[in-house]
Length: 384
Image (cartoon, rainbow, N blue to C red):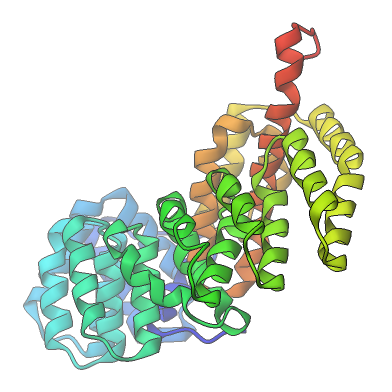
């Protein structure tokens, strides 16, 4: 398991559980719960954090005002103040940012400063993004630089994309996960930036960009650039990554077959040739799987919303992925993309499997839509 910075420590302890906790009424009750969490630390039940989050989401302005008053009164130990700042972030109130910046600037506690940065990022506004970039520019620790870039990705702050290139430069064998978290959270906003780097002179940059585009963001926009890059790429491993990526970015199986047949006709490397041949040979099996999947699917906006809400609530740890899959359609893709980014907020590599479950739904829906299109054009009564 990878080690992560303090910046995710408190959040990881409190946002992933779904056990219920009877919330006390009013903001005074929320403050008592926050005090209890600070006192009990890691021994606090996860349901306590869930209750605080519920209160923050139900009355963000009221809870924010109560916490701000407590913070401005001063006199709190650093560990208790850190929990208050974490809870303040849950309210997502931009008005809290000035107080958080003041606390960050005046504190020497790593945990408190880290929680301030997370809370600032949760406001997701321009001013917050600019502040985090400024902090990043003065930070020398590689661990903290990654942590800040991770937050900037989570808040999908496009102004930080140029700074994120340092993550792409790292060895993909050892640090592949950093690109997945940073750009996976950034989502579609990162796609044009990454496409520009699939031909970078730095092999690490190319490899990481291709991996994220094809295996994680499954970006259709990258298909043509990846195809073009394949014919000029000199590194075998990178060329292999392109082929693997194209299997996930091409929605139309006829287009996929056409490209891989070109590879079969032109490729000299035996391993890459073998991969392309397997892809072409497996086309009929893929079509059969799509047809079977379509027969078993029961699209339902209500069922999809129910499954999505449960999975989103737990960052993908609890819920029914099958129900999500069989009830979804192509137009649900934006919601599915938001869910997969939410899953990465777990900030642990154990989230990767659940992230890919969502990707598989997205890919299937794209294939199914292409499968149905010819039927619709002929007016078949079997068209979906």
